[in-house]
Image (tube, rainbow, N blue to C red; front, side, top):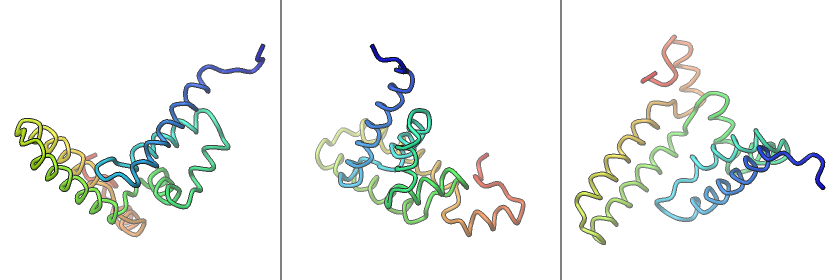
Length: 142
């Protein structure tokens, strides 16, 4: 029998691996985000595996984003523009392939809310320092 098997750690590790897979697919598949699953994977690995958490935090693609997010809640401006471009192209594809106005409206409305959420955070470490030096909130809706 396994002596030190921890069901919670196994759950978080498995969920982290699934989210990491979604993040990798999201890099190459337009319309599927990679940043949110990467944040989720880092969270899951923090609860389950120091080795995997250190790996994802130092990964050449995910690491800079995750460190900026976890340390200062920085969401890079380049990523915000890419997110808007991806969401816009997804809505255009929906429009031309389905013509379902109700689905397009609901999806577009959700995408607008996600964009508002993302744009309230600083786009760089410099902007974070500027907001902090002025005594302003880091996320302007908080």
